[in-house]
Amino acid sequence: MLIEVPSQFRNPAELFGPAAYLDPRRDALPGRVEIDLRLCTFVRPPALLWCTVFPLLVAEARTTCVLLVPERSDIAVYLKSVGLFDALRSGRVEVDDRGIPERRGRQVVLPLTAFRSEKEAEDLANRALSALEETGLGTPNVHVVVSELFAELASNAVQHSESPIGAFGFIQFYGLAEGERFVCGVADGGIGVRRSLERNAALRERARYDWSALDLAVRERVSGSGDATRGIGLYGVSEDMRVPGRSLIMHSGIGSLMITEEVESAARRAPLFPGTLAYLSIPT
Image 1 (tube, rainbow, N blue to C red):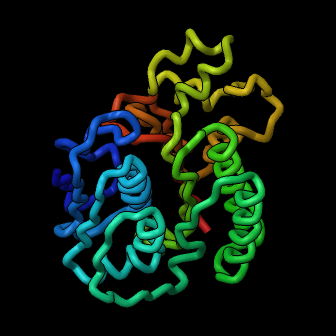
Image 2 (cartoon, helix red, strand yellow):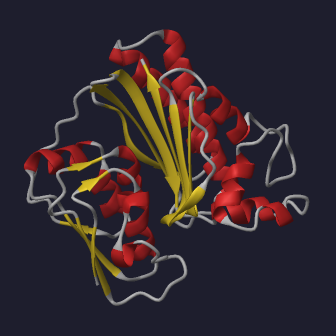
């Protein structure tokens, strides 16, 4: 099976064809799956997380999985430098980058890194804060905000996802037309927000679909564990996005949600992300 992604791959919600609803956690797979990035002209960070989780879940299902790397050398260098190729190889995904060089400049604050436990998530958040401080970009207050929100997303993934491949997180710096910013993401290949909330009997009837579960997850005092005092939760993360220039994208199963200062659109149906993805963008 050959799975092609958009040439300008911004977000898993843009997927089409067999990748749009194929779930490697549950669906029967052919003997070989190829993820085709050859024609990609850029890959945005939310799409990077799909490029990590989906192939690793295919390989976890004991199916041969191959990533066909972008033909454009600058895109291939970016994906190698952010740590994608190493992350995939560690999970038995075949990647032939033909010796493309790695150039890890200040754009890669924290490369794509796997974690499975609370201790590993905490250590990674501490590494993130040190790496943010070393950039010399932004203020100490921004560094703390980014690292604390990253820590919450990482902790949430460990506590609730039950992911067979663990979770992955990264932080990057971008100088865009709208200004300099830090972006960070955490994703897993676990049970998803809806099934996590269903563990709480009081929420089961209100979280019947992936999109309604996402709407519910960012409300105050909502928790699949039933302990609403455990950390700041996704509600706290979403509240911190209601600041000029900040944004949050969440994608779990076939539900997707975006929150900014100006917009909190109702979660909508989207192509499938097999697990949960959370992506933050914060001006420096």
